[in-house]
Image (tube, rainbow, N blue to C red; front, side, top):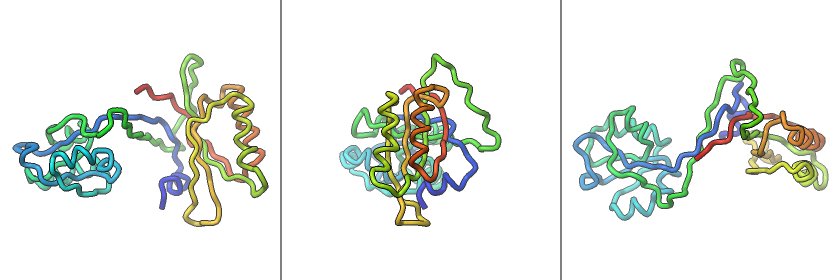
Length: 216
């Protein structure tokens, strides 16, 4: 099941988004780059660091996530095994940093999102001087040019679409849903008008969250 499928089943809100561009090689006390033979991490983390992994002569081993990789390395207590994860994960699991900036490209960012219980999440207090992102999921009507018409309101109201992606729900492979991130909050009249126009051409609509734009 995809994250978006799961997210829509949870009573949660997207509370914050963070982008990090640092990946670290971490290991147990007594280990070093010379003792390492294997490196654990999420497949995406391994792919972002594949050239450095190759240069170090390490064998990449895919794991479920980066923090979980750090935990597994701490439990193995094997100086031949390290992980690619954040420095915070290393700190939590008592590991040391063996190499800074493992990613192959300096501008390679990983985006993390923070979820909050929908029942307990208060409405975001919008600061007019702040910059915000609104994340939305929708399913368009089955009519010609529906997507073009649905997102046309954003261009008409000068609202920037930061990201648009489609995904196919697991329970119905014949339909497509869309996830967009837009500049601004629904408190902005231009965003409100664009969203109102979008809703005329969709059969499902949900605001995943409104949150401050992250500064790298």
